[in-house]
Length: 221
Image (cartoon, rainbow, N blue to C red; front, side, top):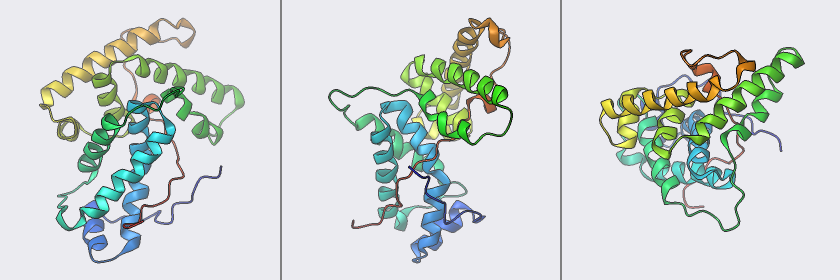
């Protein structure tokens, strides 16, 4: 399946400007918001539901709600805390399909690796490291996995995460600290990677883009 090209690529307007433009009927502005956040919302939905089909539906449902809420959205700078909170609620409210074979986050690595520059051995080494890291993330409890996905894979800061998960910033810090300690311990069990328990987990090792092909939701369809 071919990745859908982003028709709004290169749009440098802020979320605030895009929301107001979309409110005035600028469909390209809403497209830009969709393509700006669709992959992160997909990763979030996949981390919670472990169902790629459900994750794609969560992307569409999240932006359908955003479209309906355009008249009352007032982002000061970034819309993503609001979007991710909607996506989290949709993800936790979704019932697992019967007979579903659960997917893990490491399955979202394959497409990104296929387009990665470098020698075959380098790509293979990076693939192994990322799969081990994402496998360890999958082993975390739901609350700790969620803050790792939001912070390291989607780039939300601690204040934004606190808004998304509705808890104090101190609680977010505590969950991240516990999660990273567990990840370091897990990776230290693989001496072939040369990772020690005290070695910090780098954001680039956790940030794995996943392109999806869901269409931009249009109100009324």
